[in-house]
Image: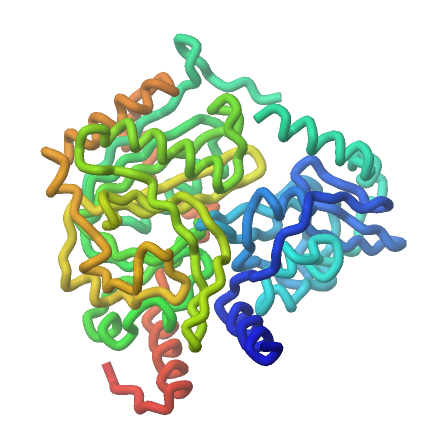
Length: 155
Length: 287
């Protein structure tokens, strides 16, 4: 049984599909959030960026992540890549400006990490920030949780 | 804050009616309007000039197309900017594309499922009375070697009459806008379907049927192409104030700004074919 599940997991990765169950939408304290549903974890001038649990839940199973190249410049609020789910590509927008210093190449073989581990193993890029002051325009976890509730209530 | 144009209480939608425009040119136009316009648009292209294979953004040629015959017959292969599967399009295909601001439809969330539900309902209205049209619920299965199935996702997406598909769609969603485009099989050449492989990620209702048993032609159900097109425009009129725009105002083949849809080169296809043959331990036949 275990061998069969391992085989199935490898096949799923090869076919770029996720078999992981989706969790309930959650937020993580100490992260900052954009109104386009990306999160950022700051460590000095380094920022790790991904999409939130709310986003992955609404998008569905992610089957492909279009990653930028290392060295690319990103701008706050502008798209830098995309995810594919349910026959749709959806832009990923950067919550901060700076230079991409690392991309999560694991997502090439396991795009479902964005669904299964949105705030951890599903990170997308790491950025050397050019303006830490931009973080002031982002939401904290409480404000973001409320933002999601308000957005869902409107529809 | 962006103020969107409104007429008679409905948001404006520009309508561009095309005939036999090359599909790559249509895709470039769509991306350009998605990224650099703040208006709502409907593009209708009644047929395209020659057969083209069009894959989604993550499409891998070796998995989706019969490379040997595609190389032999020099069929163009395009990777488009939206998600989804692979189609072969020609002059029997009718394309309908909506490009909208995210707040154009009250209460509609700009995510894949809600968008597909809304457009599905629109086409249900368009095709009311012509055959048993419905949105086909897809349970996407992963088929294991040992015939064990796992349901990956369930959503409504294909347009079908009975159990036969006549339209497939895909989407692209940005911060403030979205595109939903559909290729409708008004008619098709059975021979062209042989260029496509049956995808490994397939909906349950397909039941491993080959293309010719899985698809149907709209011409068998709808009186004419113009009937379908006119009814689509009329249905749009329930949600938008539709304003025809002459294609000369938008078509610009030299403008490839924002164009990520691309034609795969012969070299790329040949490399994919060689790699596939290597993997399968078979000799690559020169085509």
